[in-house]
Length: 209
Image (cartoon, rainbow, N blue to C red; front, side, top):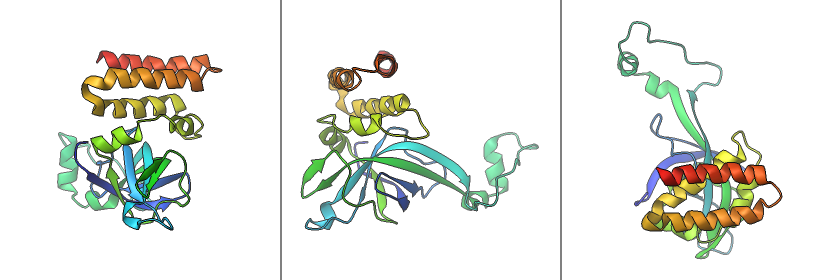
């Protein structure tokens, strides 16, 4: 995550989330990744109006919603042979991913709540650089959005994935980052010990790896 990397293009967007299509099959960003894309911001430099999202879902399916892929590998020795024998599959299939909006940047300032407008259709989606991840995660205000989300993935899995991805950019300071995140979660989830325990267990297991 050291360099900015384009990972897709927005094809659907609303106030709370967006879906992007990858240019290459199976090249979706990892679960929990912090990504960014542009949005229209009045009174601000449009080149510095960024919307931040955390990847919570990825899917590979047929590009035609009315057709499902069919099994093709009965007589093949490995999976790659299927694509070599039917190269058109690379154009018939598509990989999408969805991001939960957790903040935005406008006028040089980062806000960790929903932006005034959704992402732009056909806007490029980039992985945030290490420095951008550090800047965004200087405070944990975004955790409240994750904890209150109602998505197909469980809250515990999403929060854990996001914090583990963010922790990777801190190097030797990863442990300190995780401790601070754990303290914030303990405050936010003081009334739900079971959920807190589940999230912290995942973070603890990651720290041992």
